[in-house]
Image (cartoon, rainbow, N blue to C red):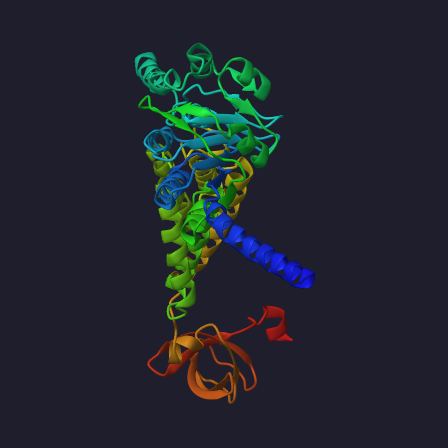
Length: 443
């Protein structure tokens, strides 16, 4: 009986354990999910598209929050505005986290940081320097003041509602003030400092945040599973193309391949590859702010290089063309931050190489077109011949292994070396290849 009781007790324990496990499984299934997007690039249409997609995915998946890790020097004003609008209108709370150590949220990145429901920074990071920089050079004072006031008004529209220090935020926008993580926390520009994603989510668990519309929401992030939002193949390609240095190299390389196809028709591969490269480069540059004055410089440079090859300017036109090409490439992208500008080393190297190659190839083509193609009897002019018999003044000569009838300008002996200077129909006109000196004639 005692043994049966022990077995019955063990069976009841196993059943209870199984039931307890079943009852716990829904809790496991309800583990909170936080989706994470890493933006480590300039602010431009590609990064704006990535953020839009990540927010839409987090909203559709029912995530507890979207964690956006940023490290950016800034970027384009229009792209920044679009990203701020996406953050402010997101149903899912957006956490912007400046990380890892050494990262920054500069210029437009600072606006994104302040727009977030939760703003956080890792130790050793900085944010600020958010003064608006014109994308198209120096403007008049009135227009510059309009743009600055507009950007500051945009920041004021949400900073106060987030419960952050409006005065300190305005200082970053108006006078390019920058803050370390500790300074930003002291100035109430961010909500906390965290060493890692896990510690950040643990610190935010149970915290009540105020959404832009004034509603309160409690964050439940304990033990949250972080799902990384990976970039798509399209976004990877666009991120590569939006690099102005890459786009410029592809544009120049594609142009040279197309030129090669025009001069050697039928090869197909250079023309097809060159066209693809040019189209991709134009598509990438279209995503960036382009200065039309720089485009005019590039067109003028091409014209100068063509003139150098055609009329020969003793190198002066080529040098002027290369200088125009360099300045055109350097100023092609109206970059608000240095990271979006064309590298001076790339611009100078590409300009010099493209200028030299273009002049060299054009001269070869022009020279080939100016040289008339000679066939048959025309091809004999300038050739050397040998008299097969005395020419007084007509006779037969041997020209490049062929026997031709020729007439000499003066009587010549058999075996005399001759030079073909013209022809009449199929009768060659020849002269002695080495004129007979008077001393030799009397000899």
